[in-house]
Amino acid sequence: MNPYVLMILLSSLGLGTTLTFASSHWLLAWMGLEINTLAIIPLMAQHHHPRAVEATTKYFLIQATAAAMILFAGTTNAWISGEWDMNNMSSPIAATMIMTALALKIGLAPMHFWMPEVLQGLDLLTGLILSTWQKLAPLALIIQTAQAIDPLLLTTLGLMSTLAGGWGGLNQTQLRKILAYSSIAHMGWMIIVLQYAPQLTLIALGTYIFMTSAAFLTLKSASATKINTLAMIWPNNPTLTATTALVLLSLGGLPPLTGFMPKWLILQEMAKQGLPIAATIMALAALLSLYFYLRLCYAMTLTISPNTTNSLTPWRAQMTQSSVPLALSTTIALGLLPVTPAILMLAT
Image (cartoon, rainbow, N blue to C red; front, side):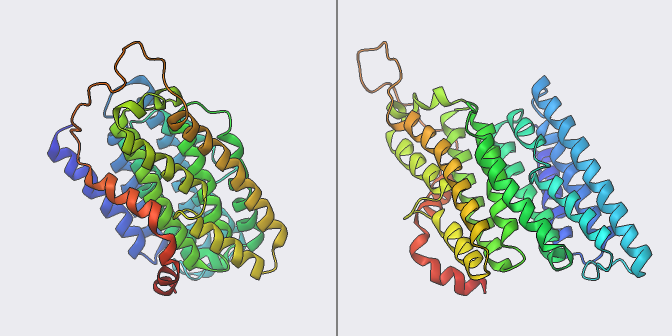
């Protein structure tokens, strides 16, 4: 892609998200979401592969439907209350419609079916943008309007997402689909605690972005898209394989890695709010997710690919891409648990 075009698309992505962050008016928020969607579509279809074009078309239709619902709900609210302000959601129907549309945008269950299919058709870097940056604007709107939304709806969406994310990833062999289901499960964790402690949603979002970035960048550097290619990584790059296994366990939420921190804080908050059954279901759903991360770790570190050469170490080509983002995101994805009190202090 032409670097000037790429620069315009990436700056439009940034502009759309910033516009939504800064808005308190539904029309402005809708405009930011639309700029965001239109900027990522050329990035998704840049390889002109039929699979990529199919994924782009699906994504466009889903996002257009959600944007139309947001505009309709915003208009309904303005018609009833007389103003377009986000903080004045006086109509419960409009609030529920907006929450449904935003859930469709970020792929919360039961509106999650498009997410694995779309992510499977993209290359890994565009998939990374879709899994991290594209979640920010809709989540900002959900956080702003959370007080007007029925708590039961948020709890239901959260529980369904963690269960669907854990259950759906169990029988997958494609890494991008596994990461899509992982994303759905993490979104569920963020949404369920939103009504009680929004700062925990932000902490969970931050750790999710770093862990997912580390996972995608590793797969990009290893050019791996299926589980059976993971078995080939060990001879080529042993250090990267070891850190990747830890990053995947961190995504699963094992202590003493960063991924344990948001899960621990969210379960603690839910127990404090008198929701022991919901907290138990969430913890059990996390075990489902952990199973498929362990499958990936097993394929990477405990199996050796069939080898026809006699030498144990093959030729190791020099990495052409920058390793700084990968090193930074991996370090953060592995080592933040000891500074949990400091992060909590900064968030509150």
